[in-house]
Image (cartoon, rainbow, N blue to C red):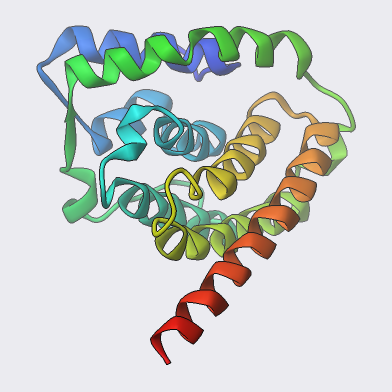
Length: 201
């Protein structure tokens, strides 16, 4: 893209462009396309992909959560440029699956772009960005145990996508919504974790 994405539809357009250029799209290629300082898309894209049929593949939600967590750690640390280890950055997805996933997200993307825009912008800058990233880290930790239940990992991923969108469009009101979603997702993750530990006792 010639400029960083400004909304979710811009992100999907970028993914479509990448899928047209090559048969397989690596994680590093996606990060590079969005710009190394585009925090919002780096949270949104993996989270939204988990909400598509791609997320139903065993192990994929956990892999996506690890990718998000690595980005979130760097946001908390205040790094100016995002970096991913080669083990993750070199991983790829087929262009066909990427296009299919992006297409399934078109309708909700248009709805999101219509309703969410710059409000309470102060809640999406400075320390608030780092706080959001810290909460995203906690949400990522709930994904592996939630994979035990079909589609349960979509809860934290939805909250992560909300945080990413809030940062992308500078919408503080959406940041508050993301906090509420996080509370529910973390509660569910804690419950599943306790259930799993008691079952193994």
